[in-house]
Image (cartoon, rainbow, N blue to C red; front, side, top):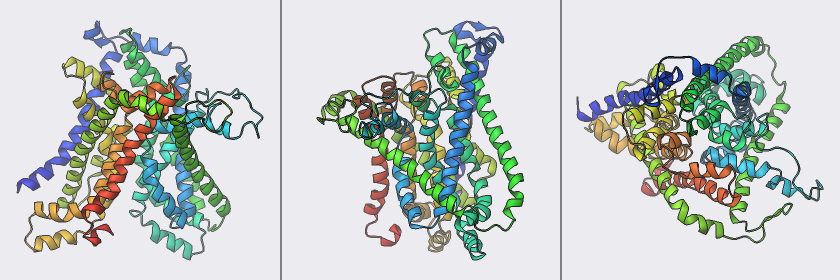
Length: 564
């Protein structure tokens, strides 16, 4: 066995260890303090007192309700938008337009989207200004609570804006696997309308393939911190935000309460996943008769209208949010209800240039490090599939989703505890490895389908010409997959740029990035400076996607067939 083959066969095991060990160690590290055992803080007896204190925490029931409702509602809305859009417009010109917009939408970090939405829909936001006073009669900002409404509507809206592009990307990757085009052609030939054909012929095969991404969305939405800090209510907040506040409290005795809260967050996310699974079983049973009832065109017009309206509403809200960020970053003076800042200036950008240089450097270096590590491991796993001529086992694929299915607050705090007990320094390396836990699954999801669909006959031809496996990989597969690898790396880099909680906890609050600064400023800082940091947070992933699309074309400009 050559060194290349041996290395490739070891990389999947290394990947699994990288994903399983930190999550498992983090969960172990949070369980002991939850039951009173943390000698560093004087906890030397096992007790349930901290759980009793948690149950008596003011607003705990509201925290749990808010986490569950916003998580499930946002996932349901995002999935409905994606499925309605695919049902109504698959293989149409509008579908191709939205597909081209997918990369820019994915480049928008969660915090930047949340800040933009807050600036758009606050009482003094861009939306109110555009319709005041000529339509609304408002000369002063109206009196309504957004963001931070107690029902979590702002939080749901912010989550939907970012969940739709992700679920659409996962659906696009799964459509060829379930033979969507062939199923759709057969159903249309039998007289079914586009929506009915998709719902009855494609969706039963598509949903099992995107079930794990949907579960990952539920896990994120029920335990998000940065989006909830920006858009969610504060009294009480979501449970994940409360846990982070207890962790950061100067009273170190609250670390025990935070550990119990982290385990409760894990249980709340598990409950949300269980509720969703139960709803899946119920829908499957109720829809069994509908799938074979012969109805061919019921709800066609409604489905098309809803699919187009909701899709363009989501894209329009995200676009308007980003436009509002740009205007605020250029505003010198912008009183309500003026629709346009006057005068416009680059002063805020110049003032931020010096202070933002450090966070920008940290953000870029951590993102590049986490992305490079993730790409190497993912390419190794997929190349191992090529050598074995079979995909990863279902259990191994589930492990790839593990960091996305377990709430970050539930295991990252445990990692911090172990980090302190082992004397490991909090800094760049720890944060980069922490980011890799979340970057790697997205890189795998983005690259796997392209890697698996590459015609194996190219490798067979190279082997017939005497090329070794290493040479075949280096001179055949890598050049042919340069585009998909670059796009997957851009997706991973965008994920790293948007990471808030791993940076905050594993960096011990001392490693500032554009995301941590933007979230901190969004809680009450200058809107102009907040907009600058949010746009800087957006610019790095946008640059990554631009390089991913342009670099392969430049490198292989003399090899036309590699660009088709």
